[in-house]
Length: 414
Ligand SMILES: Cc1ncc(COP(=O)(O)O)c(C=O)c1O
Image 1 (cartoon, helix red, strand yellow):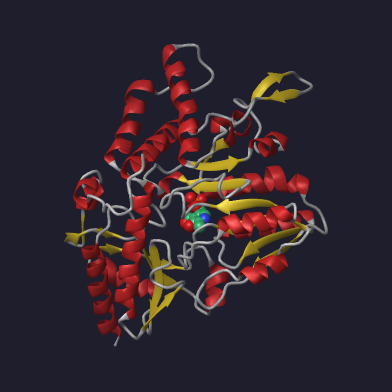
Image 2 (cartoon, protein in one colour; image 1 turned 120 degrees about the vertical axis):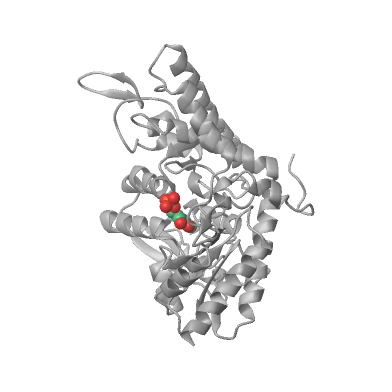
């Protein structure tokens, strides 16, 4: 059962699960605020990986021996656990383990898009997409002769839903939308977008890289046809991502990679493929990573995704308020009380890279650059921004350290 948002998190207990947070950087305690890029990994997940290699390591689905059977069961069950985490009642058949969000999106483009799209078809996406979908669908459009349209954002960083309704037509075959923007912190109305898309017969891909780690997900409630996310942003290991797809769609699609593990019967002339999801997991799959991702789901659910969401938003609102008190700081995206757990900003006269380097002297890790949203930065009229992104182990005191470090940078450049 999930805990209520009114209970706050026991941050001290949570932090004790993350030994890396005890580290010092530049002789000061580490303040890790780069969670939108990669989150830290709690002991139970690290232990799961170590345990797997200590006791179970073996290839899956190939051996009759004990270790292979144990690894296979754990790996299969990991798919069920991840399905449960995102509300996919179809279970393992709707959950493909990939390398990351980027690969998940590329599978949709290659295995569905190359077959389904042609000249005259349209892909609708938004101005706030991460390169992992924007570049992929730009290339898909180029290769298939389809055209790509971008739903605009308004001055506050919200999607212009009137423009979305104009862009999505009967020619639209796919709508690809980021659930929570990794730059603006906007949380998009994906259920509403799905409804508009489905009314026109289009499929919907939701990029959940920044939502799955931070809020309860129900892929069926939002009626996503595809939903993509990464393990390393949600307390899991690197090297694993997930592509959720509705079963009938995945069944109708060609495999993405061919080879061992995804086949049922092979002759010199032809091959029949395994059932879902193995049809999409050619070669030796991400065994240890998949099992560890399931453990990360256990870890997050035990704390409560609704509480994790509330905590991240509370810290982002606090950071937003404190940053707003400086009149030479520009913050991008929606107001303090309506955003995901991150804040992107610029300090007048200080390049984001310099800022990041100075706050690093204070032990603070933030992101600087375009956050893989170059076109969005162009729309905002900036080359780069600084981004602080929060997770379940961060505190208000850490935000205060960030603000002091930023103040230091302002004074250095004054
Ligand atoms: C919104 C969004 N989509 C996609 C990605 C790509 O994730 P990955 O690098 O794990 O493929 C990211 C990573 O920052 C992201 O923030």
